[in-house]
Image (tube, rainbow over all chains, first blue to last red; front, side, top):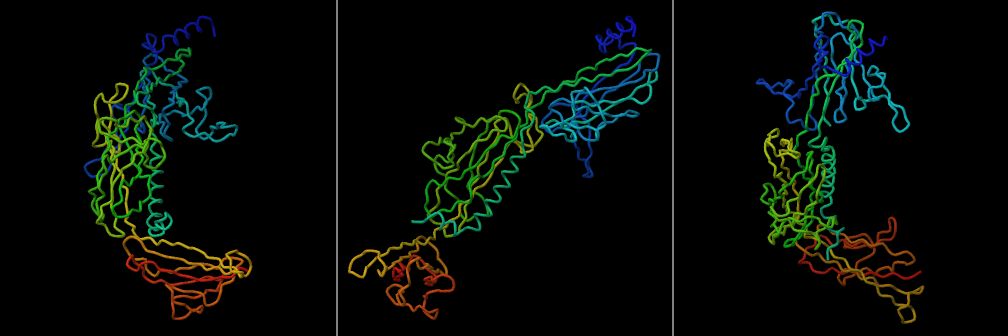
Length: 159
Length: 337
């Protein structure tokens, strides 16, 4: 990397979704509460509602929308979302079309598929559970064309 | 004098059933951990890295911020077994545990109710009727502080619990086997009602409070069962040695006198007195008497015998006994080997 490119990259990091995002890629996050609603016929369905008055035991859905607002395709896109300490990832909930989904159990230093994760607990290695997850990330398998949009989501329960 | 074991034997089946139910209740309460504390801020910031025009760039998103609200929940469990009581008993205390299963600090009011359908009598609430188990002894003692509504309503942190006594008197006009129930209710002062109801601004740390699945109110019932019947047994012995004295030497005769008396109301049906002949003594044949009348050693038509099937044991069938039958006296003799 040339010095010039490095400086540009650093500016990109520092501006973090600010001015530079205007002519590149946008990422917006939103959070909803997932509730079970009873319908007139007695059956129930899940709905996403505003995340007001979040309580222990509530299920939250985090959604990230990525949009390429530049005139060129964006490549090697990786979206990373931390899973806060008070949250427990809901197994199988992460979604993202055309994306490989990986998890971290070490604070985001390394990532692997769900079934490949292991943790060391009191000196004994064991398969990781969803409670161990610290981050989830989506690795886009294709490029994102100019003007195109993609969505990722996952659910987590409030402890 | 009624002993605990005699009373328990009178209603053992019910007691066991209750203990099992209580264990289940306690387990249920345990599962209701309060969870993330009210006021906890959950922030989420995602990031994206990408290559654009040959440059690797990472940007972060807007941060979503959630503040955990207060969930108002309470659980009341009965900690006492079914209490065996006698007619006219005073200050019989049932022990309950009130647990704040919400995620914030909460103040609860306590109340009692003895007019419960389906039982045989209404216990009479003592004045005051509710005490805290201040000395954590599990028994109502002089050190325990009475509860006064609005004055010392218990304030419990998330997951915290307090032990509370409900104190009642037993009416004089109750029959053996009658059951009376008493209920303790704990209600959140923040609010009670349909789960999901929002009490704006009433939560800790400036949050809204939300009524949880318990409705912010919980109760449990304790049970008294009248078990007046008890059989008092007193055994005495008199030693006569071969030399005219009272030394317990080999060859001395021991006269055992056992008095049995029913106290309280009810009938001790098919009462049987059994007493093994002590080790190092030998039963003196023909020495059994009931209320002064001799009984043969053989298993025959009369009320008593020496049962030698396993160890030598005196058996006297007393039949159905009530208070009106008065004291029954069994005597027998053995010699020291």
